[in-house]
Image 1 (cartoon, rainbow, N blue to C red):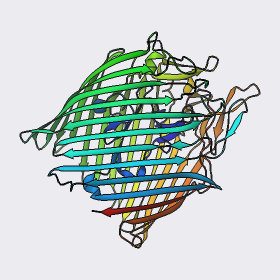
Image 2: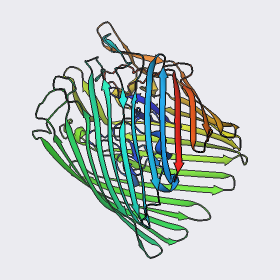
Image 3: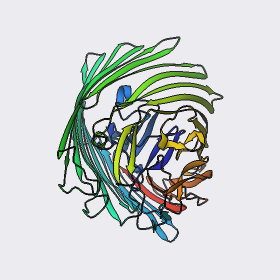
Image 4: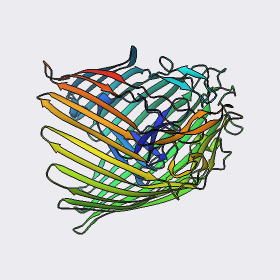
Length: 581
């Protein structure tokens, strides 16, 4: 996807930025089948070897604000991972992946999935998946003082995820256990003794679609999320942290189609967030909530969106109002004009989005934070050149007012949050695609500039007001697939990052120094053979990072973390089998 680039936070956590902006803390919403996966204390995401690819049906992405419908985490983008349902399976699938890095294990993952509509009960279907894994890295992490550790066997990423979905007519029940853990020696930057860090989460959801006549559908829903993120149980560690947060959700959505050309979507939601300390030991990163061991916040939100399709132009307009018991309310409108005419399509979008502070954001700021608000303008033109070729050009302008900024006080090793004045970017994205029966290919280019937009000191690159820390202003992505014979496909891909800037090394006193990361090309190739020997059997093999570039992940703010080495060249193998019932 154009615009997205990875970066590192602290403690080895890798996440995404979009269009030059760091999306880690509550600016990018990640959904799995509609469930929000952001943790609720800091609002962050953890992406390295976390979610199972083998159970995914497709991934839908909104590059741009989605707060009007999805709420505060959808400030800059929404990523919805949609897994395979019962109807697409009608059977059982098992898949295993293995990676080799030099002479060492790179990764090993196993996924078991099932789904069926033939349960013996009319209208009842069931599907589910279980994934476990282990991944190592390679290279040497070196902090700004010159201390280092070898990442091989010292920086593992270990997922365990189980999901079950039951559907009965219009009722859907689903649950998920997500137990992700990793080993960290990098802490907030300086090398420390190893710690096993956990991110546990439990999700329960229920929704029921009620048809009111032919034109109205009302869908009430209930949800429960219980999380223990960033957990380190060793009380002697500088990273000790044990807190649990629970969110209770209730709401309802109404969809109304008064005519074939008009749709109205409206809803109301309420969240009750409750967090508490799991340990009375106050050391490391463990803090009280002010003077209390627990804290409670409540949020209520209402939203509405209208879609009008006409001969001249299609109009989407809507707004969301959300009120948080500690930081007040935010109203964000959205309007979009779209049209497809022959081989052309066009889009104009003006929208606002917001990010309400998370529980620890509020706690570590002393209660002084305000919601940040984003204003985005976008325009897109697309042309179907032929029946096989398509091109689109998108431009955007993003302004974030009162951005919530995270930092680590290196003297006290304490975390802190505050509102800065303003940041933002503007840029362009170009997407070209070609597709024939024997294969397809796509190439996209993205560019951003922060000139005249950014006033956040910890994001700045000295002497360069056009770029922000960690993220390349230029990026090119290429991917394709070639059907060599029946069943056999070759899938090459490449991501080319332009120059990046970040805190790369330390001076003689261990103070971080800004450096330049040269342009980097991450090239991959993968071959997949479907229905090999027997129907349903898939065998794949390939090479990740063919040129062994060791893409480094830079920190997108002045937080004291040195570059995190990437995996480098890895030989990958995959074996999967699916049997229909």
